[in-house]
Length: 163
Image (cartoon, rainbow, N blue to C red; front, side, top):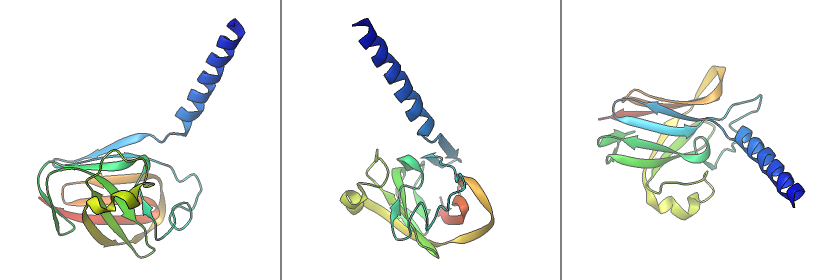
């Protein structure tokens, strides 16, 4: 019995360690009126857009749980009126443009269930892709209350905001 308990404890410890190492760190980007919480994956030598993340698909805009964005006040997000509150942030990926999506269904794991909740989209904004000359190793989302910027690998997109 003692050997079984010891073996199970050992296996649990190893499994916990493996899963802890695979999870991406969670990061918060914040300004006066915007807070974005996302899992921050790394490039690790991979081709990200058009490779790891396929064009034409909806992406969680981060790793692990879907990214969440909170607006402290009503905002024009890419010209679309959005009420203050918290939303899930998805991106539909294209080579030349992305559609940035705000959805009212929170606590999503990835974008796996997106098709079931897409009727809860509150805004869809199409923005051009900018190709960066220097790759960004870790997914980086920034905000200054005027622009939300998403950059990873050699791709960057920005959504203008007005409060």
